Image (cartoon, rainbow, N blue to C red):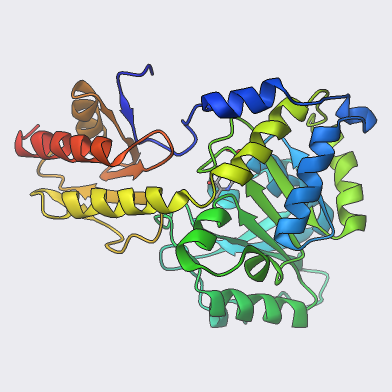
Length: 348
Ligand SMILES: *Cc1c(COP(=O)(O)O)cnc(C)c1O
């Protein structure tokens, strides 16, 4: 998809900036499988410090960080509790089942947000008929929930409850940076309730590749073995870690611009006939809207938008997702609104 499209499909479509590429080119590197890459070490130390955790491990993807977390906390025959729309449950091929022998218990939330009471009856009794309930996974911000920020009090209550039941807790924080910038609640406050936390550098932060899994030193030491068997041991990975370090330095605070742009996009779409922004409230950098079936399908809508140079992602028969990021400006948002308006006013 070349430069000629305004690409709102995802915040993963960003390309490294010139300054980020310069940082990558200048990175000091070594063989990280042999423990020799100083830039990877620097990134891992920096991320652990930022999240207030003892240690961090650099991994190729958010999917791998969730998978390793499940392997650290669970054994075959265990069960994890997650929100029904979560990434780990919907978009990772049930890796917890394929590769860990773990079952999932999905609980439907409202735009990805669970009420603590919903979990209270979810711990299986200790009985040979049942799986062992072992782990609670939350996601913040919640992708399919429309970029929803988890209410802090609910996170605190759910994790406290989990601890009281001797359950481990993992946060899929692929977009936790967005929650930090939008709420002003410190990163380490969001993370302190969880045993392990995964964060992505390749979403809103604009790095080309990479995530980190953070947690206690002993667990992260074990994670090195899991990463290796999953094929995630990387050699001169400092080139990638340098991009992530650059992103942590320069691309976190600016997420506020993405949030303002998403708000502007939603406000532009809200009043267009045949379309409905849902959820109505925009918390961070994602806008979902429904296309009235009387107009046509979301896929038809997206293909008409493409003819006007705007890419958005159909995520359900009537639903389109638009995500703001480093490579779209306020002026791009205005052009996109015009395109959406034009498509909506010409019935399919
Ligand atoms: C993108 C995403 C992931 C997975 O990250 P990949 O790097 O694409 O594997 C995990 N969780 C959430 C919430 C995501 O949005």
